[in-house]
Length: 227
Image (tube, rainbow, N blue to C red; front, top):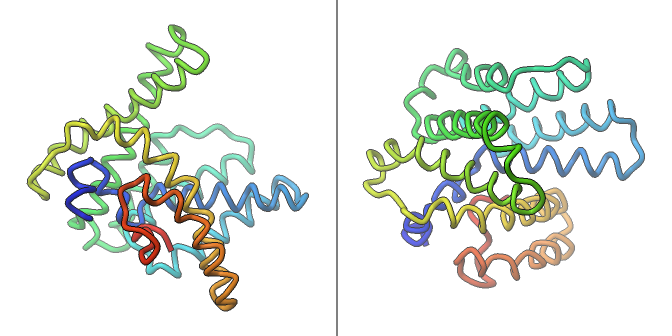
Protein backbone atom coordinates (compact mmCIF):
# COMPACT_ATOMS: atom_id res chain seq x y z
CA UNK A 1 0.00 0.00 0.00
CA UNK A 2 2.81 2.39 0.86
CA UNK A 3 4.50 1.65 -2.46
CA UNK A 4 1.29 2.43 -4.33
CA UNK A 5 0.89 5.71 -2.49
CA UNK A 6 4.54 6.64 -3.04
CA UNK A 7 4.29 5.88 -6.76
CA UNK A 8 1.18 8.04 -6.99
CA UNK A 9 2.80 10.90 -5.08
CA UNK A 10 0.34 10.56 -2.18
CA UNK A 11 2.66 9.24 0.52
CA UNK A 12 2.10 12.39 2.60
CA UNK A 13 -1.52 11.31 3.10
CA UNK A 14 -0.42 8.27 5.11
CA UNK A 15 0.60 10.39 8.09
CA UNK A 16 -1.15 12.89 10.31
CA UNK A 17 -0.20 16.08 8.53
CA UNK A 18 -1.15 19.72 8.58
CA UNK A 19 -3.86 19.00 6.02
CA UNK A 20 -5.71 16.72 8.41
CA UNK A 21 -5.46 19.16 11.31
CA UNK A 22 -6.79 21.99 9.12
CA UNK A 23 -9.69 19.81 7.96
CA UNK A 24 -10.60 18.99 11.57
CA UNK A 25 -10.47 22.67 12.53
CA UNK A 26 -12.71 23.69 9.62
CA UNK A 27 -15.16 20.87 10.34
CA UNK A 28 -15.41 21.78 14.04
CA UNK A 29 -15.93 25.46 13.24
CA UNK A 30 -18.72 24.55 10.81
CA UNK A 31 -20.28 22.26 13.43
CA UNK A 32 -20.36 25.06 16.01
CA UNK A 33 -21.85 27.46 13.47
CA UNK A 34 -24.57 24.95 12.58
CA UNK A 35 -25.30 24.79 16.32
CA UNK A 36 -26.03 28.54 16.08
CA UNK A 37 -23.08 29.63 18.15
CA UNK A 38 -21.53 33.04 17.59
CA UNK A 39 -18.59 33.50 15.26
CA UNK A 40 -16.24 34.18 18.16
CA UNK A 41 -17.39 31.12 20.11
CA UNK A 42 -17.17 28.94 16.98
CA UNK A 43 -13.59 30.01 16.31
CA UNK A 44 -12.51 29.54 19.91
CA UNK A 45 -14.29 26.18 20.17
CA UNK A 46 -12.68 24.96 16.95
CA UNK A 47 -9.24 25.98 18.22
CA UNK A 48 -9.74 24.17 21.54
CA UNK A 49 -11.07 21.05 19.80
CA UNK A 50 -8.13 21.08 17.39
CA UNK A 51 -5.67 21.44 20.27
CA UNK A 52 -7.23 18.46 22.03
CA UNK A 53 -7.05 16.44 18.81
CA UNK A 54 -3.36 17.24 18.31
CA UNK A 55 -2.63 16.27 21.92
CA UNK A 56 -4.57 13.00 21.64
CA UNK A 57 -2.67 11.88 18.53
CA UNK A 58 0.67 12.51 20.25
CA UNK A 59 1.45 15.99 18.89
CA UNK A 60 3.47 14.94 15.80
CA UNK A 61 5.63 17.76 14.35
CA UNK A 62 3.51 18.46 11.23
CA UNK A 63 0.38 18.66 13.39
CA UNK A 64 2.09 21.06 15.79
CA UNK A 65 3.13 23.27 12.90
CA UNK A 66 -0.40 23.32 11.55
CA UNK A 67 -1.94 23.97 14.97
CA UNK A 68 0.39 26.94 15.51
CA UNK A 69 -0.58 28.41 12.15
CA UNK A 70 -4.26 27.85 12.85
CA UNK A 71 -3.88 29.62 16.18
CA UNK A 72 -2.38 32.66 14.47
CA UNK A 73 -5.10 32.66 11.82
CA UNK A 74 -7.92 32.36 14.34
CA UNK A 75 -6.42 35.08 16.54
CA UNK A 76 -6.23 37.31 13.47
CA UNK A 77 -9.87 36.66 12.64
CA UNK A 78 -11.02 37.24 16.21
CA UNK A 79 -9.13 40.54 16.44
CA UNK A 80 -10.16 41.48 12.89
CA UNK A 81 -6.58 42.28 11.96
CA UNK A 82 -4.99 41.09 8.70
CA UNK A 83 -2.04 38.76 9.06
CA UNK A 84 0.52 37.88 6.42
CA UNK A 85 0.43 34.17 5.51
CA UNK A 86 4.23 34.27 5.60
CA UNK A 87 4.09 35.46 9.21
CA UNK A 88 1.77 32.60 10.13
CA UNK A 89 4.08 30.16 8.33
CA UNK A 90 7.06 31.53 10.26
CA UNK A 91 5.27 30.99 13.58
CA UNK A 92 4.50 27.40 12.61
CA UNK A 93 8.10 26.82 11.58
CA UNK A 94 9.38 27.94 15.01
CA UNK A 95 8.31 24.70 16.71
CA UNK A 96 12.00 23.54 17.01
CA UNK A 97 12.57 26.39 19.45
CA UNK A 98 10.48 24.37 21.89
CA UNK A 99 11.54 20.90 20.72
CA UNK A 100 14.93 21.20 18.93
CA UNK A 101 15.00 17.57 17.78
CA UNK A 102 12.00 18.23 15.55
CA UNK A 103 14.28 20.12 13.16
CA UNK A 104 15.71 16.83 11.86
CA UNK A 105 12.32 15.11 11.60
CA UNK A 106 11.48 14.42 7.94
CA UNK A 107 7.77 14.87 8.56
CA UNK A 108 8.39 18.32 9.99
CA UNK A 109 10.71 19.27 7.14
CA UNK A 110 8.19 18.18 4.51
CA UNK A 111 5.39 19.95 6.37
CA UNK A 112 7.27 23.25 6.50
CA UNK A 113 8.42 22.98 2.89
CA UNK A 114 4.94 22.03 1.71
CA UNK A 115 3.31 24.94 3.53
CA UNK A 116 5.93 27.30 2.16
CA UNK A 117 5.03 26.07 -1.32
CA UNK A 118 1.31 26.58 -0.69
CA UNK A 119 1.82 30.16 0.47
CA UNK A 120 4.10 30.87 -2.50
CA UNK A 121 1.61 29.31 -4.92
CA UNK A 122 -1.19 31.46 -3.51
CA UNK A 123 0.89 34.59 -3.94
CA UNK A 124 1.86 33.57 -7.49
CA UNK A 125 -1.78 32.98 -8.40
CA UNK A 126 -3.05 36.28 -7.00
CA UNK A 127 -0.33 38.39 -8.60
CA UNK A 128 -0.04 36.85 -12.06
CA UNK A 129 -2.88 34.45 -12.90
CA UNK A 130 -6.05 35.31 -10.98
CA UNK A 131 -7.23 37.90 -13.52
CA UNK A 132 -6.76 35.60 -16.49
CA UNK A 133 -9.10 32.77 -15.50
CA UNK A 134 -12.38 32.65 -13.63
CA UNK A 135 -15.20 30.22 -12.87
CA UNK A 136 -14.53 26.49 -12.74
CA UNK A 137 -11.55 26.87 -15.05
CA UNK A 138 -9.95 29.30 -12.63
CA UNK A 139 -10.55 27.02 -9.65
CA UNK A 140 -9.11 24.03 -11.47
CA UNK A 141 -6.12 26.03 -12.70
CA UNK A 142 -5.45 27.36 -9.21
CA UNK A 143 -5.48 23.88 -7.69
CA UNK A 144 -3.17 22.62 -10.44
CA UNK A 145 -0.72 25.49 -9.95
CA UNK A 146 -0.72 24.88 -6.20
CA UNK A 147 -0.09 21.17 -6.68
CA UNK A 148 2.71 21.80 -9.19
CA UNK A 149 4.50 24.28 -6.93
CA UNK A 150 4.14 22.04 -3.85
CA UNK A 151 5.48 19.00 -5.68
CA UNK A 152 8.38 20.96 -7.18
CA UNK A 153 9.43 22.43 -3.83
CA UNK A 154 9.28 19.14 -1.92
CA UNK A 155 10.64 16.91 -4.71
CA UNK A 156 14.36 17.26 -3.76
CA UNK A 157 13.74 16.23 -0.15
CA UNK A 158 11.38 13.42 -1.17
CA UNK A 159 13.94 12.10 -3.64
CA UNK A 160 16.74 12.27 -1.04
CA UNK A 161 14.78 10.55 1.73
CA UNK A 162 12.54 8.12 -0.16
CA UNK A 163 14.58 7.56 -3.29
CA UNK A 164 11.74 8.30 -5.68
CA UNK A 165 9.71 11.15 -7.15
CA UNK A 166 6.27 10.69 -8.64
CA UNK A 167 5.75 12.44 -11.96
CA UNK A 168 1.95 12.23 -11.70
CA UNK A 169 1.80 13.69 -8.17
CA UNK A 170 0.38 17.08 -9.28
CA UNK A 171 -2.59 15.37 -10.91
CA UNK A 172 -3.12 12.60 -8.36
CA UNK A 173 -3.26 15.14 -5.53
CA UNK A 174 -6.05 17.00 -7.31
CA UNK A 175 -8.17 13.85 -7.08
CA UNK A 176 -7.12 12.53 -3.66
CA UNK A 177 -7.20 15.77 -1.64
CA UNK A 178 -11.01 16.26 -1.85
CA UNK A 179 -11.54 12.60 -0.88
CA UNK A 180 -9.37 12.91 2.22
CA UNK A 181 -11.01 16.23 3.06
CA UNK A 182 -14.41 14.53 3.06
CA UNK A 183 -13.32 11.37 4.86
CA UNK A 184 -11.31 12.98 7.65
CA UNK A 185 -14.15 14.69 9.60
CA UNK A 186 -16.32 11.57 9.39
CA UNK A 187 -13.64 9.36 10.90
CA UNK A 188 -12.83 12.02 13.48
CA UNK A 189 -16.48 11.82 14.55
CA UNK A 190 -16.13 8.05 14.75
CA UNK A 191 -13.09 8.54 17.02
CA UNK A 192 -15.07 10.82 19.32
CA UNK A 193 -17.85 8.24 19.52
CA UNK A 194 -15.49 5.30 20.06
CA UNK A 195 -16.96 4.60 23.55
CA UNK A 196 -20.19 3.77 21.68
CA UNK A 197 -18.73 0.88 19.70
CA UNK A 198 -21.66 0.11 17.41
CA UNK A 199 -22.29 3.77 16.57
CA UNK A 200 -18.59 4.46 15.94
CA UNK A 201 -18.29 1.45 13.63
CA UNK A 202 -21.38 2.53 11.69
CA UNK A 203 -19.97 6.01 11.10
CA UNK A 204 -16.49 4.71 10.21
CA UNK A 205 -17.91 2.20 7.74
CA UNK A 206 -19.74 5.03 5.99
CA UNK A 207 -16.32 6.17 4.71
CA UNK A 208 -15.51 2.85 3.02
CA UNK A 209 -17.03 3.84 -0.37
CA UNK A 210 -14.40 6.61 -0.54
CA UNK A 211 -11.38 4.48 0.35
CA UNK A 212 -11.19 2.35 -2.84
CA UNK A 213 -10.92 5.61 -4.76
CA UNK A 214 -7.57 6.19 -3.03
CA UNK A 215 -6.31 2.68 -3.78
CA UNK A 216 -6.74 1.34 -0.26
CA UNK A 217 -7.81 -2.18 0.66
CA UNK A 218 -11.46 -2.78 1.43
CA UNK A 219 -13.53 -3.19 4.55
CA UNK A 220 -10.90 -4.41 7.01
CA UNK A 221 -8.63 -1.36 6.91
CA UNK A 222 -9.16 2.30 7.59
CA UNK A 223 -6.97 5.02 6.18
CA UNK A 224 -3.76 5.13 8.32
CA UNK A 225 -3.80 8.92 8.11
CA UNK A 226 -7.20 9.10 9.72
CA UNK A 227 -8.17 8.53 13.33
